[in-house]
Image (cartoon, rainbow, N blue to C red):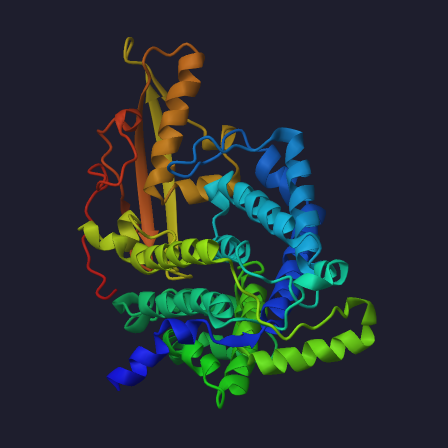
Length: 458
């Protein structure tokens, strides 16, 4: 067994040639999905609604310098959309992949109100794709420059995308191993009945056992699906469940294009031989894409290969460790959310909050009740009321805003109530703490009141 594991983990195994069609197909479907998502985002008016109309934006720690660009934000989306199209076509791929990664990431960093796990996943995959030879087959680059055409690439180039997807699924499954999800069937027992008007399945959602079934099946599915996709004998059936599972979640929950991202991305698990047959067949229909199919394998120059190996090892080490960072804090993760984001915790909470802020003039003692609607959109207010880093950023914003309005050294206090996963609403933050004087660090936030309950599990 040890020898078998050693063989699998050997450098020779990672360098084993596989058909480059796997990367090519993934590039095409992933690129077109991002292109159409960008167009859809524009047509629905979300650029103006999310990145131009708001008065303030919630920034990520360390990326406070990233801001929307006013009307030039449209230009940013044009760059993102065009580079996604070039990425899909494999035209000037290297430049297109870099521009796509930078523009997409910048868009996601402009306001963390809009954070979604699948946006984070797309950013990470795009980072990997910048370094992979995804344009050596079935691309306009290979047509323009036949000398770059290669029918084989090292296994690790395809494997890195599979690895990234496996991390997402497995960590999403591990996150579901908690008492709220498995023992209380929360929050699905709250969400499913709201869909009881759905044709055929709707009436079932009124039954409690269905919530338990979905909870347990969801955890089991996330924990095992990558392994079934990797196994040749179970792959087709596993992919069928991927399609059904994600289409059902798309019908039930407002989670954007995440289900389609996973359906499309899971294609990378298919055998590269099958992908090669598919690509060769497509070239019969589109002969202009037929470049010289050199049977030599694509290879990196030695120095570049050494650098990439180190970078990819570091990248995946970070991906494996980062979701566990919450263990450094003693508070209840779901309550404090210290380490919750960027850890593949998908739809585990129903958290509602109410936040009333008071600005006090330190010189006169006069108090002003803040109307949140004056500064925040409805979605921003909803996100702010339950997440500590949002609360602090808003408090600092109010301090600066009311300073400009003539309030002397404004003190900012908040009365916040939060209800989570069916529990009664309870006071969330210390009402006597001047939040404008608190800073957002990696250390626990002492102004958050204790969660007088226990959620067992990971």
